[in-house]
Length: 145
Length: 388
Image 1 (spheres, rainbow over the protein chains, first blue to last red):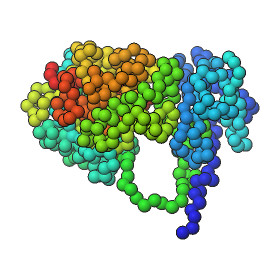
Image 2: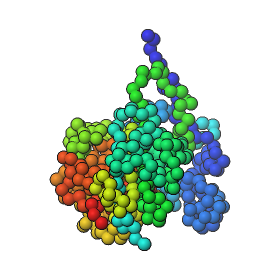
Image 3: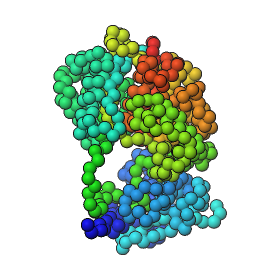
Image 4: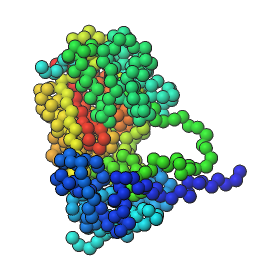
């Protein structure tokens, strides 16, 4: 019996497609800007994108850049391989960043071992180009507060 | 009009649980569970005029599950039928709607049913791995960052609790160990014959930190049904009535990471006021336990200990057999079986009736039951009793 080569090993990490609601988000990421939605009714910032504002129910929003600075609000360390693109990375961390502007953003933290991550750690955004169309905002530790 | 004690649980039907392939799908388990519940109550199909169904994962695509189950059971002329889904809060919530329907005269005798069949019999392993198409579920930003599944989202909330309040893995492990001790006395539990120490807990593999394998609920095939009817009628039936003294729901909304509070405080307020009980009246608690962490938060949110002190509260074993507050006395979903909100309901019925065998707790007149769905998103509370 010949050795079976799993085609799964050839599968790379999933790359998000540019849905209409996230077009401006990804355009910003390509420029090196982290964008969130700003409600035109009450000014509250939000992410992920929503059609209406849960604070005031206004339907108008525009995309605005934020500082990309924040702190680690929470994090986990993934040990199971749900997708073969991550098979070589387990255990890896997924973090919840609370941006200085108050919005939470789920991402990865680079340049640190998963078990060295702590809640409250100051971080800043970086941009990782994963395809011609898609650049992903990720974060790295930064000094001080 | 108070609904306190107006209705009772008169029948409990519980199939075999776990790696159980008695039926090919959830419908089969649902039918068996209803038959068992009717037998338990001393009733027949003709007595049922209401059917409420909480479909599990493998049944949820059936958008009219209560009608499908009605047809499978050959039930005629129902006066109440609904499929409900509040996640893990549904079990107790179905019972609430049954009580409301009975008290208002809409129905007389209602079956509340959960069934699921996510496990498949072992089959020859297929050659080769998956194709890219098999991973079509991995869409969007979360997938790009490697965030998959509910375990991972719940882990964020647990981590936050650990950060703010100093909750530790030992604390979570104490809950897992206590419930395993209960399960070791429950013949229906998937882990009945498998003891576990705190060391075993720590040595179990990580699923997603801070959750070990034994912080997470089981996966089970099976079905559970209860029969709800008026208390007057229940008194004449085969088994001692389990009176429904109080009931309530609480769905806080917002981000549970910010509050670390479930819907329990809201649901408790309604349920305890209706029942006329205080926390000190509660003799045992069957609390929803998709994770150890959920039990810890729920204990805090009912006020058994202050917010943030759930860890030290459970650390000394007071929820374990012989402790001052028996919790999840059948082993819960961590160690007995995963039937969503019906797992705590079923154990409560067994305990209040005094039918829990070697794990029977001595004081079982007033039992608290909680259900919890989503990520601390939906909550339901029942207060059950041997007497009105």
